Length: 260
Image 1 (cartoon, rainbow, N blue to C red):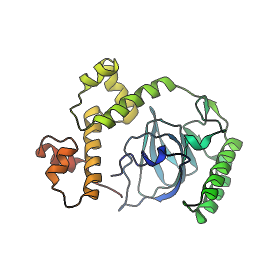
Image 2: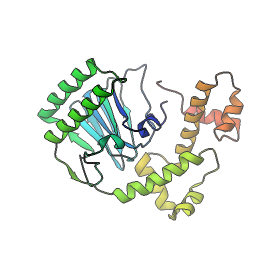
Image 3: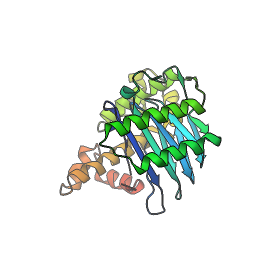
């Protein structure tokens, strides 16, 4: 399981991430709903990837492109055989570029003829990629943003206030998931009706609040276990917010670790 894959790194200044993924039956990443202070592109080379951005969800196939603005909640569920490039560019790096706060690329784009040219560029850059070279990273980001703007029109931003409001809810949960959080307490804190917040949570994350918190706690457990392999399981589970070992093992069985 890969929790909040880019959360910390993607919030650092001038962060640029570029990686190609190939999903197999033996390795299928589980991309938990997350957000970050970076824009994100996914370029599908082959196979299928079910991608959820804000309240939209589509199955994206070869030639498709997805775009995520800064702080937009998103996740994806690639199937075995999927192959795709992921690119993240921090908001600090954008600098003089359009920061996509008023006009943006659509979340889901059909690649069409320009996709072949962009794919050729991605393959070429991947063959010489050096994550330690600021010159290569900055040149890559400049050219990619230029190509995207050349081939794909921008549009006005939609539902920005609703997205930002929900991000505040996620921020609170991510800081307090080890504590007892209920739908009622969360609704009171943010001034929502319980039914409205419940529906909002399902639209943005594809799961209910309890499932989200349990998965967040399990993700934290896997992370701690990797850092402290000799530590007692019961102690790590308690540190992650599980008050009962029975509950912990039941949740752990439901969400086994996948990918690394």
